Length: 447
Ligand SMILES: *[C@@H]1O[C@H](CO)[C@@H](O)[C@H](O)[C@H]1NC(C)=O
Ligand SMILES: *[C@@H]1O[C@H](CO)[C@@H](O)[C@H](O)[C@H]1NC(C)=O
Ligand SMILES: *[C@@H]1O[C@H](CO)[C@@H](O)[C@H](O)[C@H]1NC(C)=O
Ligand SMILES: *[C@@H]1O[C@H](CO)[C@@H](O)[C@H](O)[C@H]1NC(C)=O
Ligand SMILES: *[C@@H]1O[C@H](CO)[C@@H](O)[C@H](O)[C@H]1NC(C)=O
Ligand SMILES: *[C@@H]1O[C@H](CO)[C@@H](O)[C@H](O)[C@H]1NC(C)=O
Ligand SMILES: *[C@@H]1O[C@H](CO)[C@@H](O)[C@H](O)[C@H]1NC(C)=O
Ligand SMILES: *[C@@H]1O[C@H](CO)[C@@H](O)[C@H](O)[C@H]1NC(C)=O
Ligand SMILES: *[C@@H]1O[C@H](CO)[C@@H](O)[C@H](O)[C@H]1NC(C)=O
Ligand SMILES: *[C@@H]1O[C@H](CO)[C@@H](O)[C@H](O)[C@H]1NC(C)=O
Ligand SMILES: CC(=O)N[C@H]1CO[C@H](CO)[C@@H](O)[C@@H]1O
Ligand SMILES: CC(=O)N[C@H]1CO[C@H](CO)[C@@H](O)[C@@H]1O
Image (tube, rainbow, N blue to C red; front, top):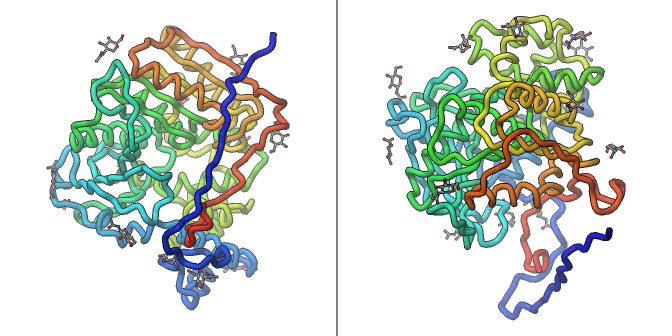
């Protein structure tokens, strides 16, 4: 039987601008933002400390300056919004709001038009349950979608926390707040408490909410569902976990034979594990060369682009990592899957994901379904789809799933698994994003 696809004709109407506009000049191919670019005279000395090759040193500098060109105006460390922590942060409980910026000037942000932004600081809890400040934002659609079953603006995607330690990186006393990378329960706390704080700050937000995240955020969302099974929160309607991280062990197991990936995970996770296990020393997993690189990564405040360059090396770690107590314990304490969770939950996974591997997610889903066959878990796999693009491939599924929850339609009980296949052959589809954003300076660039 032939399937009929709904046909939508898209027409773009172009109108000439009549107002005075700056004369067109060629698109600027240099990085636009000059703010925060590393001082060239200092860069060499800072990078030299890591004893990298000349070629890699140059690549790291380019990557660092590229990241900085993406900052929205300034570093969070110099932005008073993130840097000035209200004094009540020392006493306010998790889930409370400690600062609200109702209107955020988005001229340096990469937002779709007709989306407004508010930022706020709230109290979350770190892995061990200490209350700490963190940041989050609310995206306000021009016309929020209405749902029959809830009162107020539907809370999903619009409230987005920075993980604790990113954004706000110190408490009211100036004490450093580490980002507990891949300690999923800590990230789960950030999701749950940011919603509670946002609801306090903006009563127009609905009591009902859906938790959603992707990749590390998918792991955060799944972990939030596990936390909510122990500590239920009124209004919770379900979780969407896209390409979810399930455990450090899973990430490393599926990277066996790829030493660069193993080193990258061990270094990034190991950087802040000391905040959970005070006796841990990064040198337990990471060798001397790796330690120099870790210092540089922190000195540059490097993010994904810098890490991609710096951690792409094969010889940064010690071979005995997987026989250490810390590895086993961290893994046991932070993993997702095979544990009770508050459902319903929708898990999205591409079968050709080279960051979060499908067999790892499938194993976590299987373990969960084996132990909790009567919970509601819907597993959606997407043939040939990779890591981030699973949210594009699967958007009909997750948007409808969310709408059903807000409309009060109960999710089916039990576990189900579906492999979705594309309309045309897998090879017909562009696999990855092929663009990056630039700041438009002239009208012709956005005409
Ligand atoms: C491109 O941007 C850089 C940095 O903002 C500036 O120095 C340069 O003059 C610009 N070039 C053009 C062609 O606009
Ligand atoms: C720096 O790197 C070079 C080349 O890899 C190596 O020969 C040298 O021993 C390294 N120096 C230190 C202090 O590790
Ligand atoms: C700073 O630390 C002291 C001692 O631990 C504590 O009593 C105080 O509440 C902290 N203040 C803030 C603003 O966090
Ligand atoms: C903390 O103080 C800020 C003002 O600095 C206030 O807006 C906020 O409501 C307070 N939060 C709590 C939980 O006391
Ligand atoms: C937002 O910031 C831009 C750039 O600094 C400025 O031109 C604009 O006037 C600001 N908008 C508002 C509403 O303050
Ligand atoms: C954090 O919790 C873990 C697991 O219970 C424990 O082993 C560790 O000692 C705790 N760390 C701190 C800093 O309290
Ligand atoms: C532990 O590491 C060793 C050496 O890299 C490797 O041969 C072994 O397969 C690893 N075991 C696990 C369970 O990852
Ligand atoms: C982690 O869990 C496994 C399986 O339950 C157990 O064998 C192991 O002893 C645990 N490791 C630690 C350090 O608690
Ligand atoms: C998960 O369960 C399915 C269905 O029982 C099975 O076919 C598959 O091999 C399992 N996969 C993993 C990785 O456990
Ligand atoms: C998976 O991705 C790799 C790398 O992009 C590609 O070579 C391979 O053909 C893909 N496999 C499938 C089944 O799509
Ligand atoms: C984000 C940023 O730095 N934008 C700058 C891009 O370039 C134009 C023109 O040079 C500046 O006005 C913007 O401030
Ligand atoms: C506010 C509201 O109408 N809530 C309802 C949403 O749907 C569920 C399930 O059908 C009901 O139990 C709620 O009362």
